[in-house]
Length: 204
Image (cartoon, helix red, strand yellow):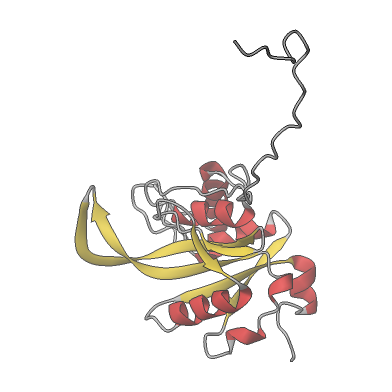
């Protein structure tokens, strides 16, 4: 029988195996669609903060904009479930020191100074649904777009997950494609300082 000369001696300690590291995906806040609150979702998705705005906040804003009527021109839902218009969005942004700059779609999106833009809010036609059924009707819908971890994302509240758009060049292609559609409008979300100095646009 073979006699093991190492018997009784402590086992040698092996160096730990190197850990496999994988690139980490940044956490992305993505608020999903409820009722007709797409304006609320678009705002919170752009700010990446579920507490940035609440339904009560937007409700108070539209009542302040037109306090004398039950149904105001700033909120089109008769049921009180949302469907806020651009005036409510603009007023909401101002409460946090930001402005909504309407982008003239006749201009080249290459003139947008992306580094000075917090995010984008698009107003686009969207299919109307009744539960799981898609109705042959369209209604205007607000969606948020912004950069997270160096990548631009479509944060449409009707998507199951955030949809990567990609680099600044790919963002510009995405915006061009959207603006070619009928009844599509683009808002730039910028700080009040940026809006005051018009530095959301490039002169180059």
